[in-house]
Image (cartoon, rainbow, N blue to C red):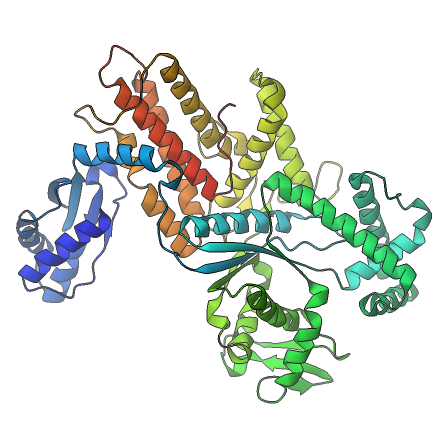
Amino acid sequence: MQERIRKAITEALETLGMSGVDFSVEHPGELEHGDYASNVAMVVAKQAGENPRECALRILAELEKHKPAEVEKVEIAGPGFINFHLSRTFFSDQVKEVLDKRDDWGKNNTLAGKRVMVEYTDPNPFKVFHIGHLMTNIIGESIACLSEFGGAEVKRANYYGDVGIHIAKAIWGMLETKSQMPKDDAPLAVKTKYLGDAYALGSKRFDEDKAVGEEIKTLNKKIYERSDEAINALYDAGKQWSLDHFETIYQTLGTRFDFYFPESEVGGLGQEVVRKNLGPIFEESDGAVVFHAEKHDDKLHTRVFLNSQGLPTYEAKELALAKIKYDHYPYDLSVIVTANEIEVYFKVLIAAMNLVFPELAPKTLHKPHGMLRLPTGKMSSRTGNIITGESLLNDSIALAESKMQEAGRNLGDEREKVAVTVGVGALKYAILKQAIGKNIIYDAEKSFSFEGDSGPYLQYTHARIASILRKAEAEGVVPSATIAPGGISTVEHVLNRFSFAIKRAQTEYEPHYVVTYLTELAGAFNSWYAQEQIVNKEDKYSPYKVAVAQAVAQTLKNGLWCLGIKAPEKM
């Protein structure tokens, strides 16, 4: 409909001899201002030096001659906005469309035919799954889902750091506590706790004792070269324990990766690529190899790509990773989600990539996210321990179960499953509800508010509608968009904005537009539900009201899917 209104305006301008005007057609902020609004008259008036309202009147007169049949009324508002109000028939047809399309409702062809790889999460074996990994996972999964909703073929990638000094610290700790090492048949939780303790020990001694520091550096070289069978065995066991543990977290979050790229497999190519381009792109400096990015962009700076020992840095490895990912899956777009602390570094990387792999740089999009903090400002628990991403996830699930018990919700065998669904949904909503680059103050209690602005609020609205639909089925009220009341409800107007919210989120890679929309939709439905009796066999409009409720439930389900959040039938 947005494009049809744009076409009608364009035709009116051509008739008036005003072609070539760049104007907008958008949903106005307030519903009373119509379903669509255009600034065309103000744009034309500014170019022609005319009065905007007089210009709007001329355009309006021409629009009335060939406006779309679904537009019931066109009017001028404010300084010269032209507002479009859609007809009852349009909204009735829209409800029918939602019921017909079901899971395809809201999908578009924004990325049709495109191959997209989204890289996210990227945890390091032998270390905890921290808050940053959790945020990156939640944001990356939503971007992947939104891309799929836009028609793209999407592959999910995970690049993890399986080499580096952090590994050596953990292995040193394992050697020191080898007698305490869990057996192969020990629970995974016991194994990962052991790894965490070993890393903490190695890290502490590395900082405190210079001699131990040198031991760990020597150990790091052995690990990198795989020159010691005993150390290799410890490394292989610990790495697998970590990766298996991460998989349990991904399963809880609802993520499945198509590709795993270990850091150990990209260093060689990174080193080769930098050496090959020494002179024209990279330069030697104090024994290292650097890239003077400021020569290409004065807003950037110099970064090391090979250190003084000739080993590839993260920058060189990322350069190689872009090529390796493309060799595995020739993408049209590679989206990389990380914390914003490496945003500037990534700009240098893209500048180097433009010279080394000019065909890949334009296909690479970095989406940096902000930090997550508690209202106290400290990311530590009451016991003083740092809160990990895993503990935050588990705490959210436990809080969901506690809230259900407080509310007296008896879900029987489904209680645990629903607690996971709601707990994960609360956390994902809290992270996705604002622009990706902003920092987040996470308040666990507020994330479970049933007054709005929370994942459980949206999920509960969906579950409430599912209950209404079960009641309608039991009473023989079949949803139908055939006979509608004369008045158009606010919730029907809001339904019309779903596709716009989805497309904007896809175009800008910003899931918060979907979060904002769904919260508005749930609010509109709950207000409508408080005023209307939806299921009533004696009411000739009841089938239509049930159809509207079903359309809202479908929209909530589809929108939540784009956020990586499940829509429960019961809560």
